[in-house]
Amino acid sequence: MKAAGQRFLHRVFEASILIKGVFAAFETLVGIMLTTPLSGRALRFLHETELHQLIADPDDRLAGVLVRHLSGVQSGHLHFWAIYLIGHGLVKLVVVTALARGWYSAYPFAMLVLGGFIVWQMFDWWQTGGPVMLALSAFDAFVIWLTWREWKTRKT
Picture 1 (tube, rainbow, N blue to C red):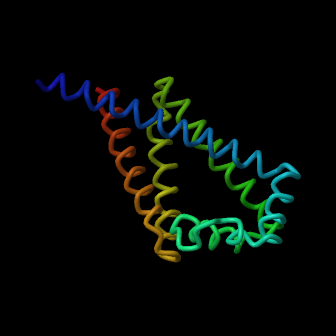
Picture 2: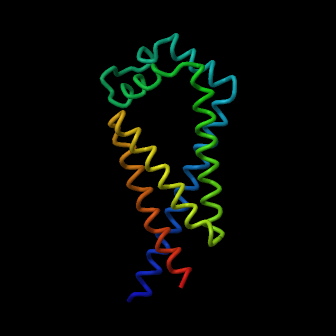
Picture 3: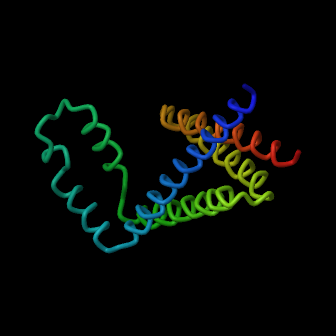
């Protein structure tokens, strides 16, 4: 029974690493897209036409969140977000690739990187109170635990 539980947790570890990899690739792609001139033009268009006028239902919660977030973004901030998303995504892609290849030294490095992300996310949560950062931090903590278990089984 113990072996079946270990195999299950190993599969959960692999799935979580796959999820991290998919999100990291998406994050990197969005960052790259933000470096194009089209992103600045699209943001200017949204500001000039007042996005909320484009939305049929002004009481739509998702639209309201989108309007609040986009209204604070200036074209000059796109450069920052592009660099942030590309850097954050590439770091996670390196970690995920190293873990997927089973490199022994990748396990403590991954735990350290994810721990750093948790610290940053919790700081952001403290400032904004957004539940997304709590969810991301909980998932990262779970992945750290799974990574620690994988690392421990590889040591013995």
